[in-house]
Image (tube, rainbow, N blue to C red; front, side, top):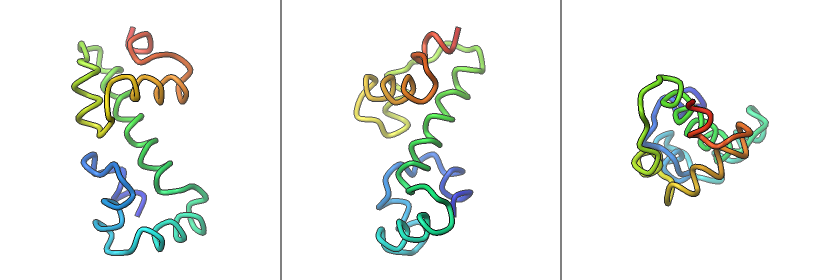
Length: 96
């Protein structure tokens, strides 16, 4: 389940993940609690942040606002806040 979710960047909500895996949201949460040890929301968030870090690592200029929208964030500020909390520095500084 984790592999299917993290391989699909268009899935960024628990409801979408549950639908993709043909289970209810609550069932997905229970399965993740039992077998993964983290919530599906945490796994999806982590996958989005990994994608943002991968884009930054490429060395090409990144349009952070466009990437935020592509990854399902409400706006660039939300991406920057999540990225900074997880990585320890803002994405633009990380990219340098």
